[in-house]
Length: 286
Length: 287
Image 1 (cartoon, each protein chain N blue to C red):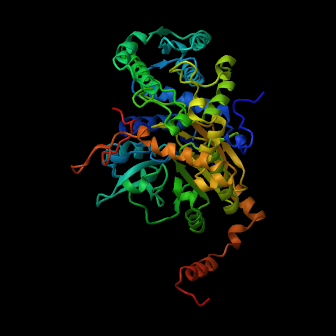
Image 2 (cartoon, chains in turn blue, purple; image 1 turned 60 degrees about the vertical axis):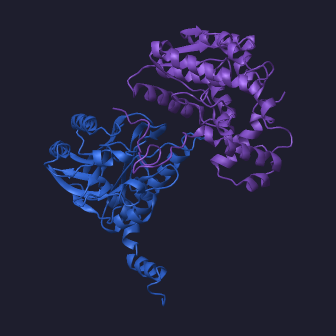
């Protein structure tokens, strides 16, 4: 099975839902012309990243009657769409969220699990953290969705892998940092290394979309990429510039790689669970 | 001959750790300047050009980002300003093809200075820096552009600047580059040799040099600052790397003592929601 994935490496305008919605729809249009089947936008693509006290102003409820959400639902009849937004739940809590839309319906909503609140990051001040990590079925097979810091922790990708995800979709608003003499920023090298590691260790596909642009002197480096089940970079996106990147992916590579390297077959979740339980002190006898 | 970015004899040499990829720096900084200015619906900037390396580099980056025709270079000499600096400023204006303006400040500064015969050089220097800020902000209105800052990371950390003078600007493109990194990027941008090689000076009085006034070289202090700030070394860990204890402690004291220059004045909190405390929006929050 083949899948034409599009990574919409955009520069969202801080706090402007209307402008960002238009940009999303324009990218859908552009992606349709390139026969994209699945289009991925970055973290908080509808709102910009450091929304701070704008949170209540830009939050949406992902329902058909929401004026910002509805056009995206409609657009998902043309191709599957993943985008980032601020989710306001029924009890008025706010989450950094991703929606996976397909055929005019919501397939899955993911709430960011790990909210970086250190150094230049302040997400925990404004958002509630997600409480579940679940893989879900799509017309391209089973998929897992994670947002930025979520995949800086090894457990969410691991859980999704065990939950059946063969494709891991990551999106982020990763600020550029660590300028040294190297050919890339040290922050960029780190993320690329991690993505390749997940592809290799899980024999999975990794689709990563990172935003570009500037917010208060912070730059976002883009560099969106696709890693195949052999850990190779199928697509190594341009840095810093806004762009629609596309990549034709052959999902049959999954069975070929896993025949050669049966890491998934040989994985021992029962062992992990037993030892985790022991480590957590609930079963100190073993 | 010793290169200006080479540490003094007897100091550890970590210069390689301060090396930067100048292509990436150039891309990110020209992008920043263009973005910061266009975001608020403008396309122009104005810069005070002293003839020194910091303002030269800032001008080169801004000209590349905005187009030379959109950067107004203003020379604001005082009667004691070095003629060589003026010539260097001319060289930069000419090589970039910048629109320019010269506004001498002697006739503005002296009436104030003369009222206080015992005035120190530092006070005089501060008056000059604040007059230049006033001129740039005034000229920015008819020009229709933002005031570009030219401060580097070394001087911002050391507080080697005049509050509301050279620090009174709308954006600081090179504020995350140490002086030695400013030299690297300037070389990559082919900034004239005479600008790059002369001893750095605030040129506030005759014969003044930064390194003479600070008491150490940029090459040395940049290494110490890099370890303390970028790499989060403790003072003791930096001394263990081989730097003199008095030097390191003195630098860190200076960074701390000047922190007020890097922050907005504190607002006394009374209400439930107070500017500077819990009224949280980015500066880039624009309509």
